[in-house]
Amino acid sequence: MAKDIHHKLEQRLLHTLFFLFGFGIMAWVPRFPEVKAHLGLQNGAFGSLMSTGSIGAFFGLLTVGHIIHRFGAFRVTVISISLLFASLGFLVHVQSSFIFLILNIAFGFGITAVHVCLNSQGFHFLERSKINLITSTAGYWSAGSLLTAIVSGFLVGRVGLITHIDVLCVVLAVTMIAIVIRLKSVLLESNTDSESDYSIKEIFTGFRIDWPVSLGMACVVYLEFALGDWGTIFTKDRLDVSGGLSTAPFIIFTAMMITGRLLVHRLQERNPIDLLVKRAALLAGIGFGSLIIVATLLPASFKWWSYALFILAFAIAGLGSSFAGPAFFAAANRRSSQPSAVVVGQFGVVNNVLLFGVKWIVAWTIQFTGSIALAMMIPTVMMLATIFFVSSLKENSQAKN
Image (cartoon, rainbow, N blue to C red; front, side, top):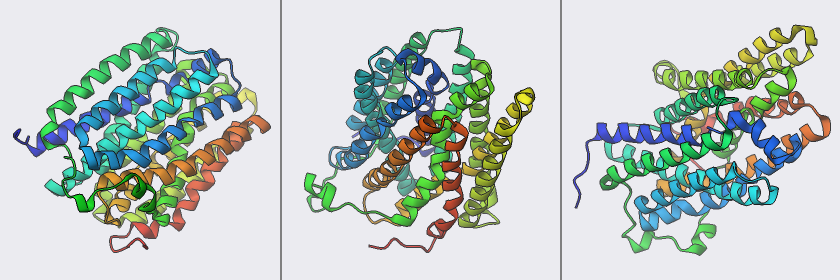
C-alpha cells in the first residue's frame, strides 16, 4: 500500500487542481464572440446551443458520484479529465451546430465529472484532517478563472482561437493527470461495504433533494453563470469596445469573487454565515441591477461612463456572490447522511436542471427582445431571492427527509 502524503502537500495539490480546473474550462469564455462567429449563429441560437452542456452535466452529476463510490476516485478522475479537455479541444474546431451540440454535451459531462471528483476529495480531506477547504478551493478555482480571462483577453487578436485552446488542453490534461497520480494514495477508495453500495436503480430511488439549500444555491450562482455566458458579449455588443476591453468586466468580477472568498473567514469570526450571505445577496442584486440599468440608459456619447459603470456593476456582483455558493455547497454535505461523492452529484443535478431552464429563458429573452440588459435582470432578481433560503445555512439546520 502506498504511503499517504502529508496533509499540507495534499492541500497544495488539491488547490493546484482546482486552479488548473478553473483555468482550463473558463479559457474560452472571453473568446465566445469568436466561437459564435465561427458557428455563424445569432445570440439566441448561440445561447441555446451553449445551454445544451447542461444535458451532459445532468447525467454526469447523476452518475459520477455513485461511480466514484463503487470504483474509487483515481480511475474516474483520470478519465474525467481526459474527456473534459478532449471535448473542449474539438469544440473550437467544428463549424457544424449539430457536432458542436454533441461535443458540448460531452464537455458538460466532463466538467461536472471533474467537479464531482475534486469536490468529493475536498470533503474526504475535511473528514480526515478536520480542515475545511471548500471555500479556499473555490477561491483557487476563481483565481484560475481570473488568470485565464486575462491571458485569453490578451491573446484575442494575437493568437488564433484554435491554437490557443489546443495547446491549453494538452498541457492542462497532462499536468492534472500527473497531480492525480501523485495523490493516488489518498484519493477516495472504492466502497467495500456491500450494504452501503448503490445499484443503478438506487441512483433514482435513493435520490434526495434538499430544497432550501438547492434553491438557494441556484439563485446565488446563476449570476456568475450569466456573466460567464454573456458578460463579454454584453459588453462588446452594448458598448462596441475592442475584444480585449470587453473581457475587463468579467476579469474584475472574478477578481472580486476571489477577494470575497479569501476574506470570508475573517468576517465569519464576527458574523454567522447566514447573515453574511443575506447581506452579500442584497449587495450583489441591488448593486448590479441598478448600475446596469443606469449604464444602458446613458446616451452613446457617454460610452466610457457606461463602461465604468459596467466595471463597477461586475465588481459588486463578484464580491456579493463570492462566498454564498460555497456556503450552500458545504451546507448540502453537512445536512446529508449520504456519502460526499453522492451528495455532490445529487446536489448538482437539481441545480443543473434549474439552471438549464433559466439559461433557456435568458437566451430567448435576448433573442426576442434584443436586450441582454433586460435578460440580466433575471439573475438579478434570483440573487435577491437568495435571502429567503439563508436559514438553511445555520449550523443547527437539518434537511427534511
